[in-house]
Length: 265
Image 1 (spheres, rainbow, N blue to C red):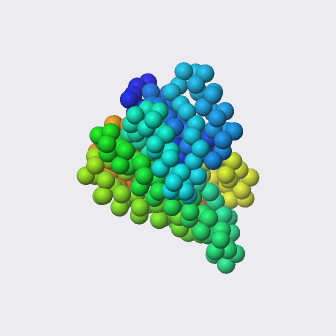
Image 2 (image 1 turned 90 degrees about the vertical axis):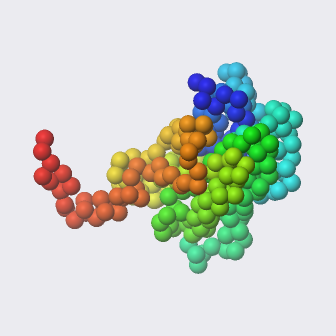
Image 3 (image 1 turned 180 degrees about the vertical axis):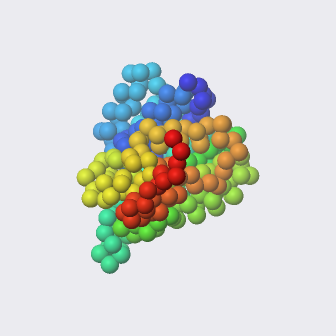
């Protein structure tokens, strides 16, 4: 339970959903974790819950679209712990309208949170990680970065995040900072619960189920830990096989092709 011992982690969007699962998992493994979010009530409640379990966790207010807010967060965390080793850029929002139906205002809002937020996070936090001797950044992208998606603003922001991840990995290697991205498939959270796309997506996923927040947090933990010391600049799918085989499998099933034909049992 000490894979993150001596690590100091900032998790943006850490008050609920996958971000909260990240906070729980990283703190379980010994990290001091800053819950950075605009959701003060939920972030404070999570911090109090984990503090009661003797976790080293604190809530900090953060609007990821505001560069001054990021600077203040870095100063506050340094005052709290004296160093920062790890950044998890988890904050994100959706739009759920097509290109023609998306206003420029909504497009820019999604880009501002999902892409600009990660850019500002790395710009302001990575110098502190460098000063701590190096560490890791984990960016939360999506399989929507790899496929046509019915939320173009979201898909474009996540595709941009992959490009930003690779560029940051090349730039920050000189500072001993690894930068990687995770591309989850469907994980049901408050952000997407009730969506009409959920069941069709599940049926097209070879493993036949949704991912869990805990599974996402385990992958964040691995990439943030020293166990992933030779991994940087990667985007890692966590999607039940959707990108690798989802479409072909669905076509085969709908065509009545027996995928197990010829298998000896």
